Image (cartoon, rainbow, N blue to C red; front, side):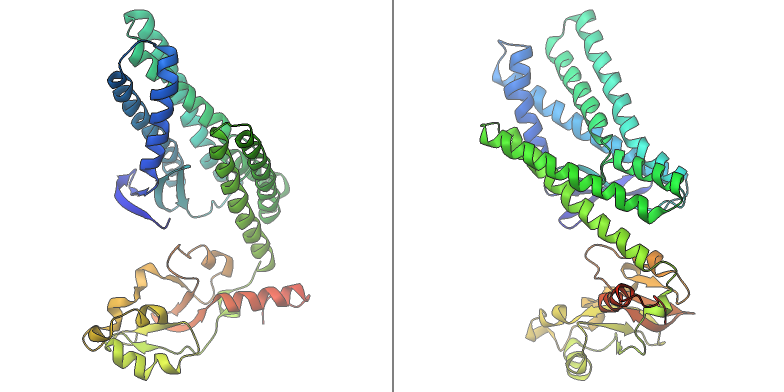
Amino acid sequence: MNGSVRVGRVVGVPLRMHWSVPLLVVVFAYGLGRQVLPAWTPGLSDAVYALASAIGSVLLLGSLLLHETAHAATARRRDIPVQDVTLWALGGMTRMDRPRSAAVAFAVAVSGPLASLVIGGATLGAGLGLHALTGWAVPAAVLVWLGWMNLFLGVFNLLPASPLDGGRMVQALLWWRTGDRERAERVASRGGQVMGVLLMAVGWIALLRGAADGLWLFFIGLFLTVVAGAERQRAVLDAALRGVRVADAMSSPVVTGADWLTVQRFIDEVAVDSRHSAVPLLDFDGRPSGIVELRRLAAVPAARRESLRVREVATPLPQCAVAAPDELLTEALDKLRPGAGRRILVVDQGQLVGIVTWSDISRLMQRHALGGRGTG
């Protein structure tokens, strides 16, 4: 996710934190310290409420991390590659390859809500027990609040609407029942769009009635609507490209440039004659080493263009989407990463043989809409 930084690893995969996480902590701390604790344990000082709310909000953030960790751990146990886990203002996100079976998809989806429900039940019980045994009101109140928040998180995520975990579970069940993965994805994503619109409407009405929490609900609904819409488009794309190989979509031959050239020389000899917005790079041995976007070349100050090598401003090959000619195009599209462009380098036995751009995909989609064959 753009705007996030890597802060460590969890269950063997990179852990990233979005810049909005501090905002999430502040919002939770404010609600706990200014509303919940004064109502449950009245008469204490502001310093006590502030300290308790800070601890509670950090513990809740840890609970969100455990929710996503459950997804990542289950995926890895089922041999699904996991790219990273990211915490952000609306919770968390685990990026992974798509499961190969409905059973695996269901197991990965259900693991997160299950973790939240277990955490919620345990902390709720611990809070009630602590208060009964010791009478420590504030720590008990924080644990009870944490328990209820996790129970709410678990139940909310079970709503049957993608990209919520409940929507993923519905999708997995439909996939198992019908054997049609793309149809299951379209149905689940449509449910996500409907749920998102409903949440936006409820949030807007709450705002009009003076409830500040309505803004949070509105943004959650907006997020569901946008992501579900993107997933529905992807499901339509997968249906149109079913059975299409990368070789059927790629453009070839490819205009390339040497990665050891200076930026200025590359601009003069390669970029000015290119009809594309990005150019693949080759190393001394003629093997692909990355891809450079012309906008990044243009951003290099004129004073540095004679000394800076073009490979220093390019996206290196490990960060590019790379596929073999005989690979399914839908599987190759799964390799596209946020911020790395929408191009797939086609490599055969170490040699660059083509490139797939979004224009190539659009052309195939248009042919599919006309009733033509997806391959050719």
